[in-house]
Length: 293
Image (cartoon, helix red, strand yellow):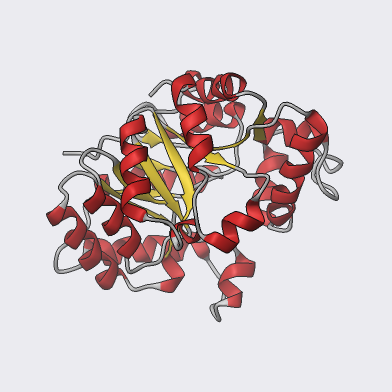
């Protein structure tokens, strides 16, 4: 039986949970009605997903993502089965090849990344207790990666994309595979303030060729991806405004063919989030009544 994600979940960086009361925060997220919690930059030991699953009764948990360069397939397969045995059909293993800057910083050569991902999937298939294809999802952006996700996993988890991209990805994937894009949101109705915050977040990604190439393939030009990004690019990638306005963008992804949307709140107090390790619970509370949960 496949993990049920619901229509909308929350995407939250793993490090934002280090100082929180994981059990209480996860239980509230569950009670608010979100279908899933996606834990970004998830450590391969899967300790945090296990804590969240233990603290909740219904909420699905997905990794968004485990970097395949930082672990071995046999160890990750064993971790997956530990969680799935204790919490059947509630854990989805999200995998990805990350980015050259990150991988090379970890001491690996970023060569033939898709081939390496395929070999990692071979390792999961060949483990003593294999990880079923339907229990894993791949971070994917470009067509070859999407095709791999359709062929060897439950589907794709594209990051930093627009509803127009979602429509194109659905065409590439076909109608069967899961399509679960991330959507960054900012709860601020002041255009200048919202775009300023978006650019603070976007600057990190504009330094990564994989994202820039995908933006350009999606119709943005060199001027859009230069410097801190154009207003056109910022407004396309970041949904900002009231909770109701943000919810319209989430629905646009669903209307474009997404099965599930992972909502990532970008906080104006991101430094405090990093320092305290506490997720943006207040924003999740504000958004919940407006989202199609």
